[in-house]
Every structure is written in structure tokens, then in C-alpha cells.
Length: 219
Image: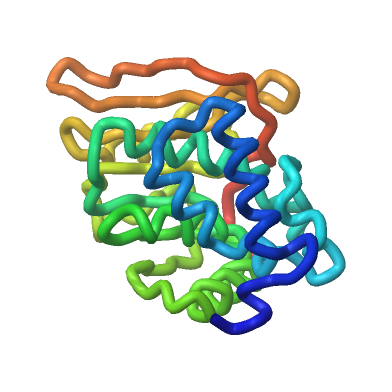
């Protein structure tokens, strides 16, 4: 492995192992999710000045008023998405620096990832290319539109918080599909898990969370 991917000191495999042990203590149970997070070098997704903090359980700035979610939130959302079993097509809204994308891509067949901030998308593409992760399609667009050309999706993961669940994204779920999304105003957000069935949409409200707001438009 490339030494920069392997990491040393606070970015080493030992540090990743400690992060995974902490995730287990925090209640993450999926061995698949834990294994992928153990092997994925999170430090390459943040600026070099922040690399030594990459495995702390905190969100970190990635520029453009965006953040990389804390490891627990990434693991929790991924575990919730995969709870019903293997997923083939997953829509991700908010590529960011690509860390959540990288975790998902190692656990599902294909990720369709939408990002509204072009420089972030370019950075994410470079990060995933370095890790040789190629089962990801990228779109620079307003996340509120989803990606109708490839809909429906059997999984949708949203990494920014709209006031309520966008109707457009609900319509792009397969029957039996699952969406994990934070909703609500700043300071009053909750993680929600949505399952689409013949009867409609079953919404389960879970943890209190704090995400950047879901913004429209492209940059």
C-alpha cells in the first residue's frame, strides 16, 4: 500500500483500530461496516493539517462551509441503510470529500453520488481514484433533484439536513427501498429512516444529529 494511505502515528492502522473499537462501544454492530471503516484511510479525505485528527469522533471542516461527518455518524447511517440487506443501487446526496462515498462503495454494487459544489466533487473523485474505488458515478447538480435518469434506487443516503424530506427523493425510491436522512432546522435535527412500501412511506425517527443545511443550486 502507498505509505500515505497506510499512515503513520496518528494516521496509522493502530489508530484506525482504536476508532473501530470506539464504534463498537458506541453500538455499531455490523461487522461489514466496521471492517470497511477499519481499512479505509480517513486521513486522506481531510487537509494535511488536520490529518492527525482524522480518527477522532468529531466532524472536521473540508472547505466551502462543509464538513466530513464524525466516524460514528458515517457508521450509523451506513448500518441503518444496510439493515434490510444488500443494496444494488444507492443514491448519495452530498459527495463532500468522498469519505462516506468510499465506505458505501465498498458495501453496495454501485453508488450514484450528487454534489452541488464542483471543487469538492473533484477532490472526492481524486480521493476515490487513489483508493482504486471505481463503482461510483458522479453528478454535479442540486441534490434536491436526485438523479432521475438512474432512478429508482433501493437505497438513498443524504448527508445534509433539509427542513423536511424532499418529495423528489421519495419518488426515486424503489418499492421496499430505504432512505437515511437528517431533517430539521439547525439545533433541532433528527436522523430518519424511511422505508417505501405499497402502503406508502414508513418513517422512523432516530438520533438527534447536527448536519450542515441542505442547500439548493450549484457552485
